[in-house]
Amino acid sequence: MAMSASLAPERRRGMTGDERLVIFASSLGTVFEWYDFYIYGTLAAILAKQFFSSAPPTAAFIFTLLAFAAGFAVRPFGALVFGRLGDLIGRKYTFLITMILMGLGTFLIGVLPNYAAWGVAAPTVLILLRLVQGLALGGEYGGAATYVAEHAPHGKRGYYTSWIQTTATVGLFMAIAVVLIVRTWMGEDTFGDWGWRIPFILSAVLLVVSIWIRLKLAESPLFQKMKEEGRLSKAPLKEAFGTWKNGRIALLALLGATAGEAVIWYGGQFYALFFLTQTLKVAPVTANILIAVALLIGTPFFIFFGWLSDRIGRKPIMLAGFLIAAVTYFPIFQGITHFANPALEKALATAPVSVVADPAECSFQLKLTNTEKYTTSCDIATSTLVNKSVNYTLTPGPAGSVAQVKIGDATIDAFGAAGLSGDDVKAKTAAFETAVGDAIKGHGYPAAANPDEINLVMTVILLAILVLFVTMVYGPIAAWLVEMFPTRIRYTGMSLPYHIGNGWFGGFLPAIVFAIVASTGNIYSGLWYPIIIAAMSFVVALFFLPETKDRDLNHIE
Image (cartoon, rainbow, N blue to C red):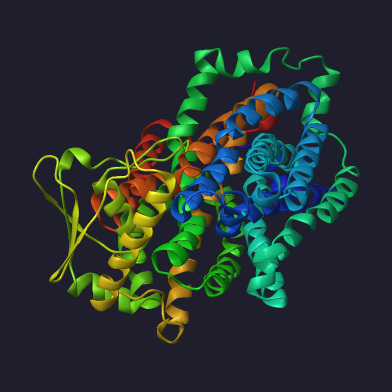
């Protein structure tokens, strides 16, 4: 759709004071919501000890990741609930509700008694609070993006909404920065004991500030106009997804835009932090600093690519981001290993490890509910090696045989946990992990990254490149999604595909990557997941999604 002559001056005029307030208030509130959400992920290891202390360390960490993912799993349902409200009663009041729910959930996590005090009630309430946060976040983003876009002049929607796109990264940066400051100030022991609660409790202050600012906002002018004209949708869910015309748009938006954006976002920012701390064994404080610096370098490019999408289009920028990330993920993560833990890289190349096991005992260890039991000797052996960042090759053994780990001339028998008591499992696990740890240490595998050997500059450069990919696919996407859907169902229509993509394709990335690595025996093999999804989105977007930058929101019905 060509831009009318009457709209052309809108592209050239500067931003008004009211528009600045809209962007500032919407962005600030969303930053705080992302801060609330990512505080949990940043402190996953500590929360595992506080709330899942009855489980073995590895299972506790995975259970904590599950609780993290639980917040993502319900995000699409939040999109349905709050998207519908947003199209029925308005954008402003709906995302005011979501912000209050998020802030209260975070504060309550900060004061929640741990497992030692409350027993099983503690992790149960924790996961319930995470579910509330997920529902709230499911309604927040669509409201903020729609609200800003409907205030933006024609020809500047990419630029205006790109400020919303910075909020997830800024929120993650705030979470990392606050944790880092409090952790350094209090010391590791005190922080791990009770100081971890401070970043959560601070959310109460952020909540009050956000509510005060957002109450100053007026309703979206497009929504208000439709309300006055009596043209609001009476059944947004049915209209958005119950007809093929709009349902097809939502499906293509999911497969061609948000799924690929999600895996690149979480792969390039959140999984990068997991990779540094869990795979490369970089000290948490150092890893957080490295990620924080990369985020500082990369964040302005959200604005740049949003602005650029107003000139050349949303589609070409996102296509480029999908393609470049898919092609370069392997060498970039291998480069991070080279610069952040060269001793591990050397050991992986010079000290091969093999697992000899009955193939029937080796499972695909996908832990989405934490009710799955992987107790065979093969599964115990492979998960132990993955947790110690050791590549291995799987050699078929005799049927019914106990798995063996071979490291150089050392052979270590694993064990099957089925039928054993909890105490026996803990004892055998500790003995097996100690034996494996001693053997790999003797063959050059470091227990942790040596701080003196980390090339800080090159590691930050590679991490910043990953963030740059994120800005390419995330900077223009809000405007692209807003422009795809009619005004009367825009909040509902864009929210569901966005949160299925980010909540499911992105939120479960850590669990899926762990399962792939454990199954293949290669610490990089999990990268196939984001690569394949990004490639899928590239193809779908290339052939089926339209360019929308010149659409007039006033005339989309």
